[in-house]
Image (cartoon, rainbow, N blue to C red; front, top):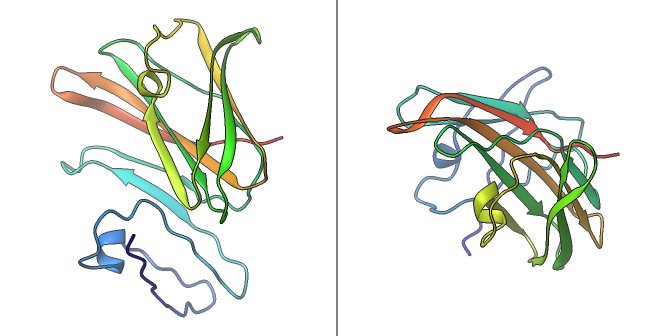
Length: 176
């Protein structure tokens, strides 16, 4: 894995607006960034398409936890999609349990797996739970890990005959 560093001094109330490709030219396959600062800092994650038709964004994560809740899911064949991203920033592998619930609180689907050190899992709902038909009443996901090393977010949107539809939005995973 190629690792790069980028150093920047921000003035008070300053900002850095850039793409990963511009920050690390020539470095391929960067799937996440770790940002360190000697004082308080905040940021946003922005996701868009190459046609410049869709843009979704949300505040960057400022915590690590052992329990995440994805409170909004949408999946309707050929109409809507949800993508989930889980990040393990620790130096150790973490074991995670992913449970999908109905809005009434009934467990409908579940999966366990290990998330390797410094890696990100990215999957649509149908790819996350392969081999099963997604229940139509799937309402939310709960992810639990064996250490406080994870964070995540969801992207969701519409589909049309050409692929991505006109809508896309993002939501940071919640914690208790």
